[in-house]
Image (cartoon, rainbow, N blue to C red):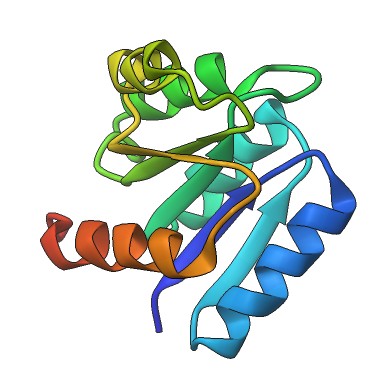
Length: 125
């Protein structure tokens, strides 16, 4: 069962997305800010990370940079999530290391297709 780490500061959004992914067979862990997200990514090495880019403590932009710079975490695919639908945001997300980008509120079918595509091509350790 693929493991997904959701890094999201909004508790309602985090819980809703967790439940929806668990119903589809994913094992889900969560973090409420960028620092916690980095710690959980390093400790658990999930199969994929959904990273809100606007986070407290340490934002998702920097958290993604650090995850992609880590020896143990660099290979983990990251989908950046943002309420901003600007082309510049998607480009910036890719520059910091996100493998894909999606907007919030999340459209589950679209997000699931991105998750499945990244998991299918993820390099194995």
